Length: 452
Image 1: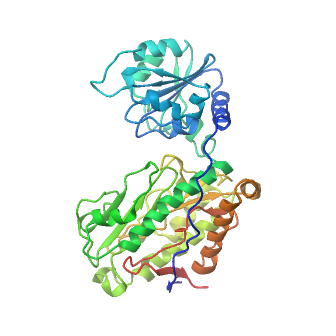
Image 2 (image 1 turned 120 degrees about the vertical axis):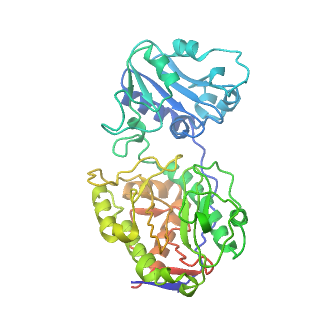
Image 3 (image 1 turned 60 degrees about the horizontal axis):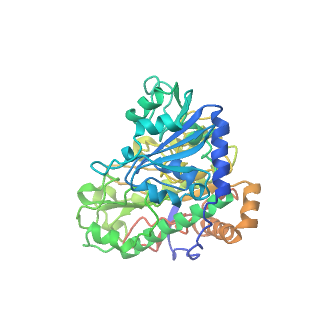
């Protein structure tokens, strides 16, 4: 059974600036991808919306333009357009000389100068004849796309196919069971915590500044969103757009008795909450009365069970089954995976799906992203970032980043002792908002907790 308690939100202070990615880290990642791909030349695509794979490999994200990383037996080249050419030095791999930046104006925006190497010439110069392994931004499952399908643009694929057979193997990086990006190191935990803390602190400011009658633009201004790049649009949905959860502000007024949801998603993070513009149950419309007992309370109980399952070795299919049983579709309407991996991209992939035998593994950066929806009760949400960490990863984190581990352990203790959530030692909460669920957003210190 769930109940409301009066409690301040925990605040363990902002994390220190995390360590920057190093050339040695990137050499390891590039080497691991070369080894996984075998003798084929590897071509990795990125653009403004699909930057995560390139960012993980190089510490570089293409801005405005497309970019191609080519890994061949002859070396590594990063093909970039006009505006990314000077920016490419942000990559420690480029700065160290491990990867050469090549100016290819074809990759620039329309009407910009085209003085330099054309893309066909650049591909001929840097992609040897022979097999090519293509890494796009999304792997396809069996039978869901045509033969030879790839998320690389056609104008790139045509040039690569002129060099040899092309096989899309995006799963080498993104597959939830075997992908190189599916687990993180201690250094990456520290970076994820920094990003998640930035998003969570913005979310806290938004909730604490929420006022009846303000516009949704004014509500987002309260968040004072940090400077890290965003992996997804900032959303705030209320009023006429309340059930369009991915809607950004439009000028709607925040009105008493309306549902409201919002999120802030910096690279490596997403904090999302949903509830009611209300102080208590009496402020809700008639059909939504009893929201706590019928909807938000059972959701919190399910999230406690979700936490308990975040132990290395738990099959993803078991997590799916347990969530579907605790949150029956006819009431909660959960349609997406109850939890997924996160990186620079807000959704990397997920080991949690119906029938999945993929295990939860140590090092998985997991979003507690379970999205219920009901025509009368609206929604509720407890989405933040976590890392699954076995004893070895926790020990490594404690040796190298003891402050990070200490904050995670204090957050977990607060979730257990104050909220009553079944948080195992293997689940590291990355933000002070983890476990904080205010169902009535005009009473933000009235938090939902489980009876013990």
